[in-house]
Amino acid sequence: MANLPIKDRRADRVSASVHDLQMPVQSWFPIATVTLWLVLLSPLLAQDSRFVFEPNVMIPTRDGTRLAANVFRPVGDGPFPTILSRTPYGKGGEKYGPGRSYASKGYAMVVQDCRGRGASEGVWEPFRYDAEDGFDSQEWIGTQTWCNGKIGTFGSSYVGWTQWASAPKGSQYLKAMVPVVPFCNAYDLAYEGGAFKLALMMRWGASVGGAGLSPKEMREALHFLPLNRFDDQLSKQVPYLRSWVEHPVDDDYWKRRGIGREAFDDITVPVLNISGWFDVFSKATLEMTSSVRSESRIPAVRENQFTIIGPWGHGVGGQKVGHLDFGKAAGRNIAALQKKWFDYWLCDQDTGIQEWPKYDIFVMGENKWRGESEWPLARTRYTPFYLHSDGNAAEITGGGVLGLGTPETSGSDTFRYDPNNPVPTAGGNNFRGAPAGPREQSSVEQREDVLVYTTAPLTDAIEVTGPVKMILYAATSAKDTDFTAKLVDVHPNGKAYNLCDGIIRARWRSRGPTPQLIEPNKAYRYEIDVWVTSNLFKAGHRIRVEISSSNFPRFDRNPNSGHPFASATELLEASQTVFHGQERASHILLPIIPR
Image (cartoon, rainbow, N blue to C red):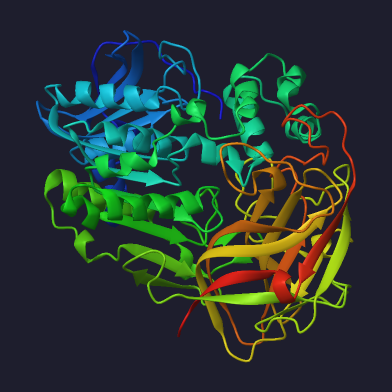
């Protein structure tokens, strides 16, 4: 994702895109052939009509820093509704597709380099200045003669963040947003259940810090200890990498890099969020929509929060992800949906969006879209499925059972967790540095440090749609350790595919402001957030839960020593015990939807 080259600033020029499509038509060309070419090219001619392109327009911010933006706009005086996209990945140039397309359809478009990126002034530090810079940019754009005072925003991933970051500031010109695979808090991006999202943060952070490694080098680098000196391996120091691991709790450092819960009542614009069940921000996307729907101070805004969530990873709209093909129904034209959204809110055109469901979800397994009016679904029946075994649940060949009834007697399973040989990440909600999406789990389930619990083949289909939670009673020989849980769909042919998973770091089990080490060999109750999914377990399929203590490199390895986070240089083995039955009835709580 290196920056695209920045062209030299030039005076305003009219770019005739259709000129690129013109071809000489010889007098001997059959008239039917000419007609055919016109028919084939007419959509392109409509999309690539003439527009004005202004490169590197410097937009001022409150502290005097100027941010570079490319401006596309239709020929003519305007004013025009305007689309803003703020990116750290390079704003491109005159050939930037969305800019040309929107300009040809009567919109102005502003594509801006984030602070310290591309041609923008200032120092690049992820997340830190996007709220203020986004607001200041919107206020400046709204006063330009070519803007009609209506601004929409769009973009994915970090560009989804730049939209959400500035939204609570409440620019009078901001009228609609389309964040794709977005997030709104950098702490939740960096940590989950107290564990650090190693592959995502270090690989992405090093890359945008100008010190990226090759994939092979990065795979090796992710094993480096201590974690607080990770950037010693890089060609240059990237200070924020150290800052991220120096703040393992959601403190003031992170609060300046996110929007707090109290900010959702300040969201005053309609939002179309788009994400995927296997995206690294799937849970955040749903929570943002639900939070604004319940907390915005403006009733009309509460009513106009929408989410589309498909069987996708960090790239949305397709039908294949990981090892599975979800069929043609899974495909969605995201650009067309986005255009309808902006035409409605910025151009007062009736594009039918008020007929859209508030939550348009794709039910995997059944492989169909379904509209819902709330999240979680009001008709959900949260149902516990309990862990059973005779003490032999390790590996797929063990006797671990998942069932609706509690075990009649107390029992337990044990395994050794060796952080020198962690369970490898095998799919899931990943972005960079780890495989993503649904993947066949046989290689993981053959390990002795993975406990496997499986139902009998289902006689009737069971739909699981909503947030999933694991209640685990466990002990360890260490002062601190991790426990992981994964929900898996086992097909009749025996192949098993992950749906969602989670992790908890023992010292953060209470989710309070300070870590609390544990007493070795003492049983504790752990609540693991297993994230969200929507899946129909068909008749003949089986439901499976995997329990272990690592998921590397998605998460950093717990060294089991209890030393301050990110300082450990030694990795210790630990003996883990998972309990089931009686007062220690470990179970997964599934959101069952009646059918």
